Amino acid sequence: MTPIPVEPLHTIFENTIRQNADRQAFSDYGSSSFTYKQIAEQIMLLHRIFEGASIKKGDKIALSGHNSSAWAITFLGILSYGAVVVPILPDFSTENIHHIVNHSDAKLFFASASVLGRIDPEHLANLQGIISLVDMQIAHETKSGLKSVMEKARQPIFKQDEVLKMMRFEPVQPDEVAVISYTSGTSGFTKGVMLPHRSLWSNIIFAQEHMPLNAGDQIVSFLPLAHVFGLLFEFLFPFTMGCHVHFLTKVPSPAVVTKAFGEIKPHLILSVPLVIEKIYKKRILPKIDNPMMKLLLKTPVIHGVIEQKVNKALTETFGERFSEIVIGGAPLSEEVEQFFRKIGFRYTVGYGMTECGPLISYTGYKQSRFRSAGKVVDRMQIRITKDDPKLKTGEVQVKGDNLMLGYYKNEADTKKAFTDDGWLRTGDLGYLDSEGYLYLKGRSKNMLLGPSGQNIYPEELEARIMNLPCVAECVVKQQGGKLVAMIYPDREAMECSRLDFPDIENKMNEMLKHLNKDLPAYEQITSVEIVDVEFVKTPKKNIKRYLYT
Image 1 (cartoon, rainbow, N blue to C red):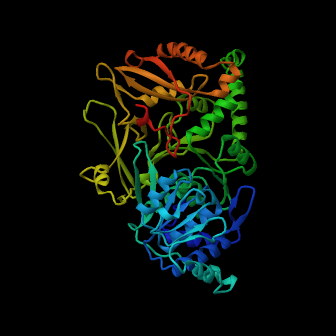
Image 2 (image 1 turned 60 degrees about the horizontal axis):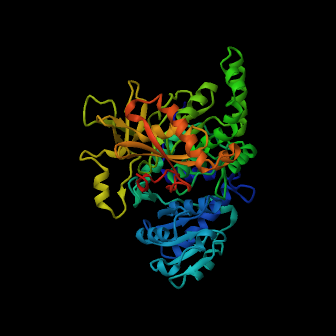
Image 3 (image 1 turned 90 degrees about the vertical axis):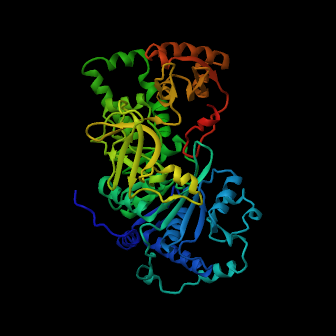
């Protein structure tokens, strides 16, 4: 592969707009579209608003709403002005949104209609104003004069054919802050991850050199843009390649997502395991999980034909022409991955975290290994730190260009996050094989100890239990030295099987007896606890384990 010229981030963005001026850039699924040139016009308008409002380089501007062209354009407008973007998930509680806007010292707040209806400007007194993402009008003015600034900014100051010539992205230094990403992690405490421009640049350059996209390719953006996985790989990276990004503007269910895939036929798909596993469980498993099909799948020659047909059907579900599906954000079910391998499905699993903006490891699907998260990415280093040299598994620690600067206004947690010699403590457990492939075992804080000091990784047990019929969600906890499986049942599957809650508990206990036969004594599940409401989750759809364990 020919190396891509390495340019500063602001130059990369300027060049992609000029080189792809007349191409379609952004579309709201089933609605309006923008060319790259029209995006440039909107960016110039935002710059005039910021200048009129006396926003300076390095000032913070908050942004909240579901994925949309307006969200993406506003992000580019803030970043290209040299200000700092504070993306906030629209699903956060009102209290959390207030906290983040205030804690980040934001000067302006751009918000969607759904967010505007839930916030109280009285609790956001430090803002100059709140601006609607729907129509770029003032929703609330704290500092007088902002309305006149907006009106003046809308007056064109140059001819339309001069837009590309006049457009300018503010040059920045690599270590200047680009994004402060607030995540309500599994610990329940919200921290603002300060990502510098070099982190965005390094992730984008890696993707340009290793991920299969070209100018004019189609992308579906359904992962939350307020999280770095969706932000970098469904938006910023495709944008720099001259792609056409289709934003799903509502909360995406698997049905909505697959409908969009079928219509748009994306060239690259990014996903979290939850979506992939639901599609597998609802669309594929019912077709192959019967005695006749199981027999045919064990029959020489015939099984190969069936696997090809299943692969074709699954590929069509995702729009057919994708190069690969990149799965990240959480571990993929072992059963699902095993099935994908068997039928030759085009997928790969990557690994990252917000603090690395996000990439740590990735390998294209042709080089990927079963249960591996790939190899460490360019401009990053990785090491495994063990308390006992005899152990295979230890904490994954990383350093390199992707790394955050620290947590905003939180020196104590920033210090805890790094070792004395500058490596980031990921909190994840894993090991490297002889060829540098990374294998993850779980979170260090989740690890349990067996009766004789054995390491028990609850995530691995949960993955097995999740593959059982009628299981929607699961948490394995330790209670009185015994392992207990908390299970939220799949209500749809229960209805199909005509089961009620007393029945489901008996059924689960029976299934776990069979599961325990394949587990060592110290990993035996001793009892089941049925819960009747979904587990509370983080915005990335990871269960907040600390609430239950």
